[in-house]
Amino acid sequence: MTTTNPALIWAMIAIAGAGTFLLRFSFLGLLGRGGDVPAAATRALRLVPAAVLAAIVAPAVAGRGADVDLATARFVAAAIAAGVAWRWQNVGLTLASGMVALWLLQAL
Amino acid sequence: MTNPRRAAALAGFRAVLPIMVGVAPFALIAGFAGVDAGVSQVQTVAFSVLVFAGAAQLAALELIGRDGATAVVVATALVINARFLMYSASLAPSLRGLGTGRRALVAYLLTDQAFVVSALRYEQREEPPGTRLAYFLGAAVPLWIEWQAGTVVGAVAGAAVPASWSLDFAIPLVFLALLVPAVRDRAGVAAAGVAAVVAVAAGGLRLNAGLLLAATAGIAAGYTLATRAASR
Image 1 (cartoon, each protein chain N blue to C red):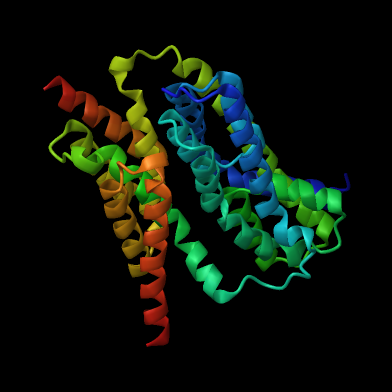
Image 2: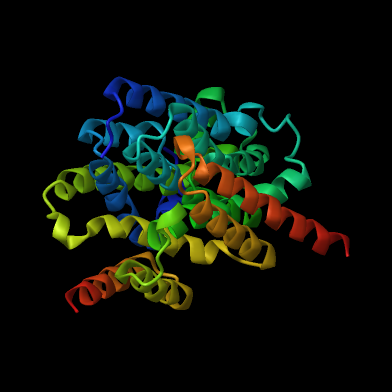
């Protein structure tokens, strides 16, 4: 639960919103006169989703810093959901299998 | 609206419909993530209206929930959204001829899903910019409505869910569902693997900068691998 001042959260939302719009508008705003994104930048940008998503998921299911623990219901449920995601590539099915696995493991 | 535009808008809607099924749980979780982080429902919905980008919203809310520093929260969201530069550059030549206001509207509504279906259409068909805009809006506007409605429902209903249901676990699960298809080749595996290890190891870092550090390390690792593969 956050203890951050709500006014500061408003500032974060506003800056992130404005920055995101500028990223989206960038080349559209230039009407295509800005040329293309360099190949090296494209290569790096293509990797952003994989890196960011893994950086969010890993500590959430495996723990962080000194609290790493792989023998938890959450880690096992996440592993099962990862298998489902890999096999069927379906958000709803991944969500359902992970939640049901967690509930079953917690009930054991 | 003239006929070809209406037909294009309908075609855009039809193309995005199956994708919308997968977006629904993501939108609900984006609303719930706000509640889970202790952010007000109004601010959670404001996130969806002003940022309108799922992964960035969820990451920012997670950092706010752990009292991350302002600069870290904003930088993390912008790094995740840097991919929009690529989409913007890809669509710009196809939409040449539209006024600034309309291009700004396209920019605001630009998402992974709307980009994918539109880029495919623009590649396959030579159409005037007005028709192309109609196709884009046919796909992007329903996604926008779904995202806002889903966030509101998630934020309101999420507050009523008891903690014993462990619904907070749905947040990493949604990321996992997006991560798996994002890992397409060896460079992607390297990026994800390095990012995961660094994120876990650097989890105790001050200001919650671990996510940003881990993502940067992962991108660097994948980039190095991709560059080597390309030069061979």
